[in-house]
Length: 303
Image (cartoon, rainbow, N blue to C red; front, top):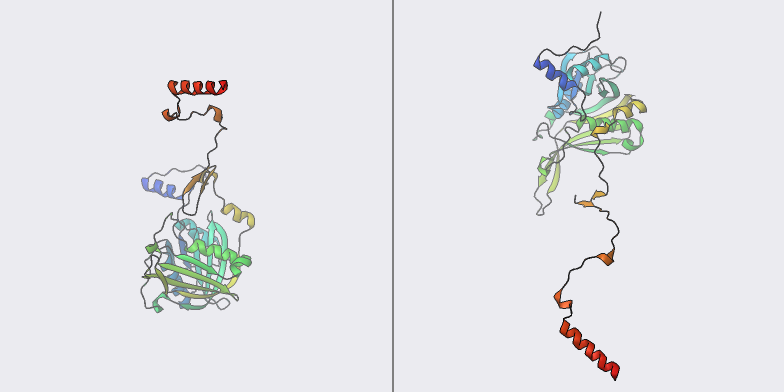
């Protein structure tokens, strides 16, 4: 019979493991796990490998085949998530009913939050592009084009999921030379196009460099299939920011476009009659000049 008490760690390694899993105000960078289904074709396997290359070192791969269907039973995905401490996953499988299938999803508190199923229509691997690649682990620039990302709820949630998947670490500053990778997502006529580019900064004769894009792969043409979206209440709970983590608002303080801090100071109303001004000797009247002025005034009055 279970006692229900919490067992304390007996080793230093166990203590560090539990501290790493403990809740925190500022969450750590999200990791992605890649899970293979019972049957995966060559296209799906290569696509998952390329996506894993884009996500390194924040990627964890399960190479064994798994008899699971996330839309019917997500127990295995939730178990793998708790095991690897990953909040994002990519599941790939291939079947006659749904060929070349990719499922992108995320979890909240180790339970499924969102899942979106995508079908691969056309795919071009990283190997097919014979050019220089970006540095592994670089933070990409994400570009979204297409009205569907703003008007359709499924595509709007897909956009949010893709940002979660590819945004990488949160940084406060970044230098221009570090911007070397761009991912473009285009939604048009029911299809989703994903392109990957290397950003090249060329000399232009001006302080601002000339920007060129060189496609490095992978390249995807996808179609949207099934979706499993969280309810509004659950989604709001997952996006809730703790009160202690919210920045404190400074009253009467603002910043201009150049980052200069501007502040407004409130002062009490001043009485200018009691204002002490600087005294100057040039404005003072001497005793001699004062007597001469009075005598001249007396003569004028007598006349």
